[in-house]
Length: 188
Image 1 (tube, rainbow, N blue to C red):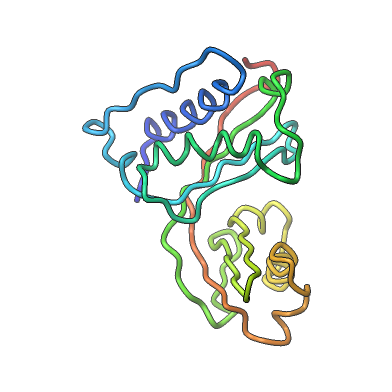
Image 2 (cartoon, rainbow, N blue to C red):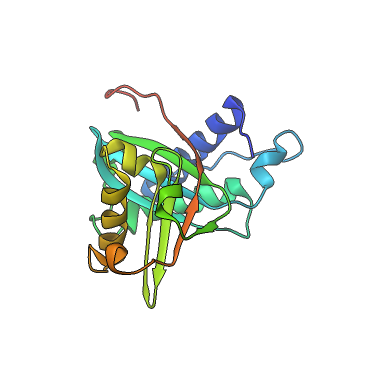
């Protein structure tokens, strides 16, 4: 899937307006799927919220049975108020957030850690009842090596940080189309 700059802009606006609905009168803009058919495709997506480059919320769906546009609207609200790592976003914080969207590709099973490409691949690990996902940009933002990325995904899933060294993980990789708002601190 490719997304035009116009489609990316529509999704960013929809995410912001979805969050705005949590604080009062706002409407999510309508989208014409005939003009923008990519926004009707089923795809997983994550919405990441940051304030002054610090994480403030991130939630998404690995896959989705609803159109991408609707998925982004839904996960934007979840990222604002349901990320268990943070208290719900406040109305005062709303104007401070920057929104980043990651549209996920399909997952591919991987057994050779040497096939992981930092900056291109995100990781999903599933071991028993433990599950964790890291978006591709996590590795680049933190300057991770493959080994650090594997350690981090284990920790995210609540597993022993070195489990990847002791056994082959049930690991899948994916890519993502990643885009974010170009906002100054005083917007909104």
